[in-house]
Length: 345
Image (tube, rainbow, N blue to C red; front, side, top):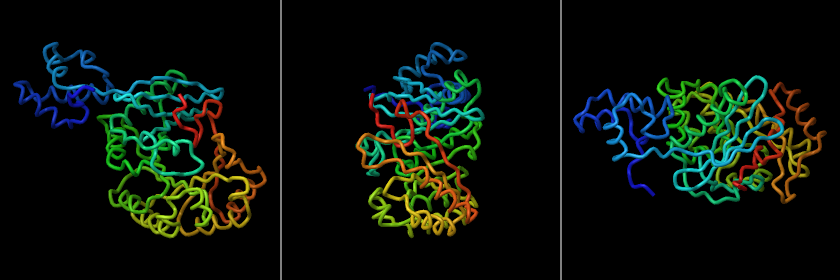
């Protein structure tokens, strides 16, 4: 592995200082910064408004650890799944989810995951490392290019729902979002970005204290502690009451309502009492519910609930004026749907 420093770990000020220290002008740092972030340069030779000598100096001192789309699969419904090779040979997956009105990038924040949610394929991979801010940023750039090529419009939304728990890679995820939303980066509105978490109370409060502008989604799946703990061991450490207190803190600080991601499984959380517990929980915090179609991961323990059970949830939530949408999974034929990202390639 190259021991040279990744140039994208440097701030614009760092770059300006580097050029001054090497008897050049500070504005060169601005030029290089623009090539790295706005123009997405993969190598120093791309930087055509900089002299050959300067490019060679950059080559001698730095690397650009750019991601590579190693494999791309297209679903029957237009969904694209990318196997993304990182500079150290590790692989993560990202997904472009197109509809007629929008293109959404589903990006990964970690290689593997350290949380053991029983229904998720990614959880079966051990966590190998956090992604750097530039590796997260590059996923978004790659998916934006695919959206423009295949869908004829630019990327409209980003969800941190790929591999990994974003709040366990807190600093890098926030640094990536800063770049994505910056005028010196992709200039996307933070209102179009959603970070999805299993629900880590301490980190949710930190998000609120840091006054983030993006949206927050929580993988809930049950509002009954005993049921949720069986599916999501993290609930043993941070139960529903602790999670609720953190979410109330978030709302008080940000004024943004929560989205609860919720899968209904056969014989696990498909009863009336489950739907009523969800209603009671939602009433304690301004929220909306995304009911997600389940995508099997081969072992049969978790199975999609009967449509009648999903209808029961919809009726129960709507009767209490809690906004609810049903999200049909896309990309199932290429293992690109929620919970299926597992680097089978």
